[in-house]
Length: 341
Image (cartoon, rainbow, N blue to C red; front, top):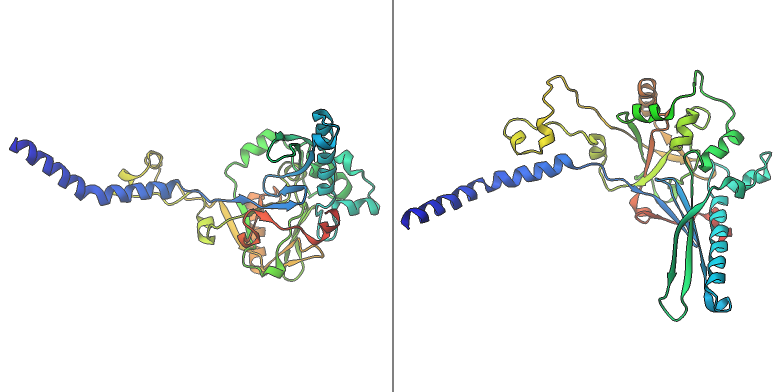
């Protein structure tokens, strides 16, 4: 009996002595497995919203049976009609560039019918029975990117030229080759409340001297249609953590024994650490709609050099990080959309 107690006491003491090392190992494992956390920047409107990170916009309608002769079928049709109207209104107010919304294009030399451009699809349909007046709620969704996306439809109207040497590429091959390519993150979180970046379908990146280094006419058309010009996100991740990206330094020595299994597989001594994100600050915004992103001359030079090697701009690998003080992942209603209330 005494022997068993001594063995039990030895085990407890050993476990207690090893506990700090085990805890440290777990913390390292979680740290190594962590990734940059980007959340979508979403603009909310009275009857719809725009997800500027994932590239969708939505319109919602409601239909009440008690206002339609007690008929659920009629209420459903009303909800669908309202959803269509809502998604067209949201589309009409989408910022195209630094001076126009989509509805403005019909007033200029470019004559388009917005309804013909929108390839919407049913996204959500439910019958809500809360309260004394149940109703149908229908939401339609339309893509801004991809083969059926709004961007693809607008390119022929708005693009005046193509980058020199641009050649048609196989989409599958392009996506595969882009897997490990870097992304440019333009950090606009430090701008004042009066100088917020407003998202747009075709934003520009400019230097403080006014030189444009990124716009609709300098990017590859296939990448533009597939990826969109830029993705807008919110994040609480620090600038340093974004720069670190998804490839942290490999642990060494005893820490490797405590780390996750995948760390043990990277044994090539000549393996170089790659940076997934190139992070630059937005110093100010420009344009009537406040959609153009202004950066320093030094940063512009570095971005050009990066683009020469990885085509980070030409391939539209651009992320714009806006301040979470804009309302978390919910943006406000822009002034130019007030008429659609």
